[in-house]
Length: 99
Image 1 (cartoon, rainbow, N blue to C red):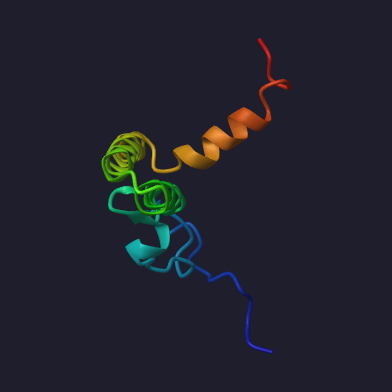
Image 2: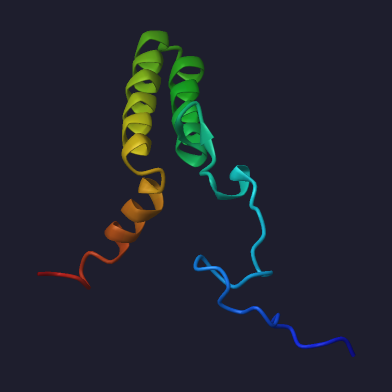
């Protein structure tokens, strides 16, 4: 058996326990965005616009839906990259947290 898990110089650094810090790559903590919008919303928006443009052969309305939807998603993601889960949670728990 090797020694204790906690090193003897505990408290030497003010930012945390010495020896228990590891560098994290930025990709592990950054939100997954597709063109500036959250990935799931961008895929849903592109699918809806593609169905409208290709399936119904309404090219101009399909492009308008895509541009407006993607612009709104990018605007919301700039303010809060996790706006989609927060919005879904808000809609699901609306009756429970009434003021």
